[in-house]
Image (cartoon, rainbow, N blue to C red; front, side):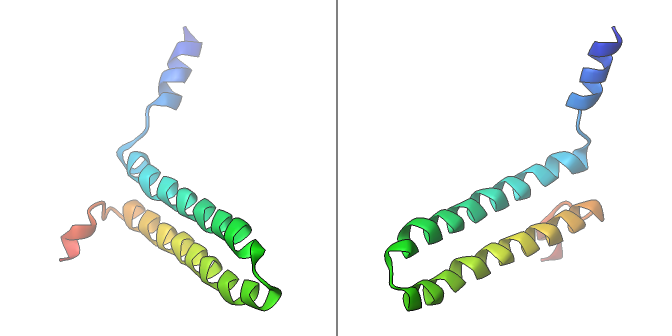
Length: 86
C-alpha cells in the first residue's frame, strides 16, 4: 500500500512544476536543433565559415537557456502569466 501512495506523490506535480515543463521542453528542443544545425550543415563548410556560422547557433542556444532560466524564475515568483505585464 505504501508503494502506491509513494507513486501517487511522485506522479502528482504542483501547479508551478507543471508550468515549468513547457519552457524546459521547448528550450531542450531548440538547443538540440541548433546543435544539429551546427553539426550537419556547418560541418561541410571551410574552417573560416565554420567559425562565422558557428557563432550564430551558439549565441541562439545560450540565449534560449537564459530566457528559460528567467521564465522559471518568473514562475517561481508567482508570475505564471506572461501577458499580465501588458
